[in-house]
Image 1: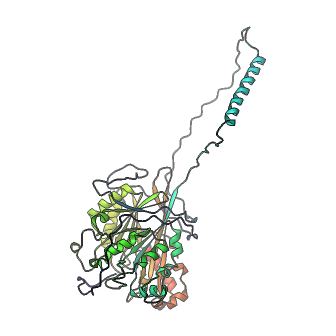
Image 2: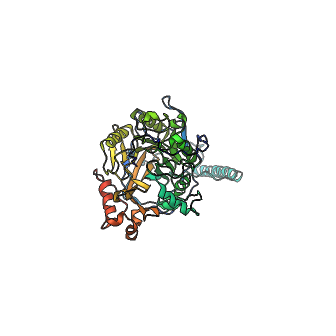
Length: 515
């Protein structure tokens, strides 16, 4: 969200600083395996992604390195075990796979059976004698094997293992989680007595929770600090969210939390970065984008699901009110080509899939600007698998980009808002999105492909006092009439659906829209 301030925040009122607790270097384990209701059917948009990196390396499954690469720090953040397999999902198309060539084994021609005459010596045994001897030998052999079976340990022979088939991870991603004071007031009321310092944000996410929970892996951009109750809920231009937001994010089902944004240092000078990192490190999620020391900043955030390892990298174009040089070098991950290239190379050695979150673009522009397209192609040339864009507060186009090594990179230029309350919102600020896809590893070659890419439109609903995120397909005319922004449209549901299709596929792609 734009601050429009352009200066440091000397005008902020001081608050008593809470005790800083050193951030944990390791996160908790992942959520226990759970089974949830079926996720919506998704049409197939397959592609096979060749594994590439800036330096040539062998094909096939990427080896899992245990140390540093090229002298880079070896520290990584890992968390999580695979959830229970998500419910069966339909696919409208076949996977894109390379056909395996098989050569028929040559069959030699059998010559006709010719009778042969064998001379038999006078002392040679008769055929009857040979038959009896053979029978006796057969009985003896059978008896030996029978005795072995009788005196064996009793353990049955190990069955021949059946092929496992492909490994699959269903992934979803949403945009900016940017709650402000009114949303905090709503969460305060949901937790019980107003003003008691307790906040329950979970009802805001209740409508999308089944979709997020059904995924094996879920991503969100947490744009605000969880800077502690000493600061309290704050809104524009310097945001802060209370610690209970972390509980709501985990309860909804998210695993990956990115924090690099233009608001990453809103209260950083007051210790908010340290406190926020401490809160998230206690949760069973991967958290990245901001750090409290150089070691944390050098970590590659990793998570494994269903035997596929994912790396998450996170960067922002800048922070409001500060120059990059004003911050500690480790505090916030800034967009920098050399830094990104190094991080991607290290991540590719450690993970099967590399996800890159980019806080970039032009606010309220439903197109990719020149800055975004330049860096998107740069990321594709590095061999990144998926680019997750945020910051414009409106949805943007989605596309496939071909890298210089022939790889294909899925780019979502802007996922739009997730939870937000603008001072002067427009209808396009209320329209949001969720990217979903499947990462599939074939057993034969170990390569991971991206399949079943789908865009699910979301709506940020409010009637002025309550707040909730809805899938568009569950949003009704009755709800739209209560929304003071959407109520101004002649046909809000149609407008939301049509705009999603027009924007997401504006670059000529044909991604299915689950509306």
